[in-house]
Amino acid sequence: MKVTEILSRSRVEVAPETYYIISIGNDAWLKLLEKPEHSPRMTTPFVIFKDKWEVTLVLDEIDFENIRQAIEGAKVERNFRLLSFDVELEFDVVGFMAKVAGIFADAGVSILPISSFSRDHVLIRQDDLARGLKALGKYVDEIC
Image (spheres, rainbow, N blue to C red):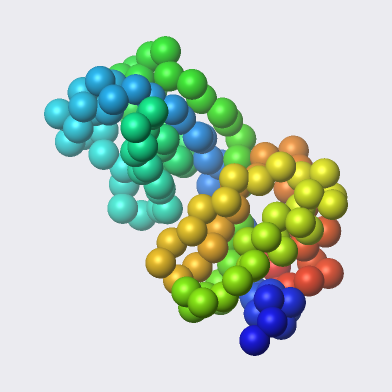
């Protein structure tokens, strides 16, 4: 199946929460792990990604406020909204995120893509939400 067909069957859900993208060093990450009270709640999406350079956290504003004191000096980007494509993607699908990124790029909207096992998501700045949804609306089945 072509990417445009998959996208046209997609329902895009806009999470009501506002998200933060945080970059911390490995030492700060190890300190956070020592305190279970800083763990994200299990009631809203979150991301933890560690590579050799940093640990990136994507947290909603409640979880961010919960760890704010513990991550002084961290790099923080604020006011993002999470858009989730509610369509299961097989691993052999080629170009889905490329198509999505192109739609947003043509509208002048920067994105941070996130993939889970079977679905793709993007974070976009709150200020770009209306413009991004307008551009995306021409390609998807429903936005809610």
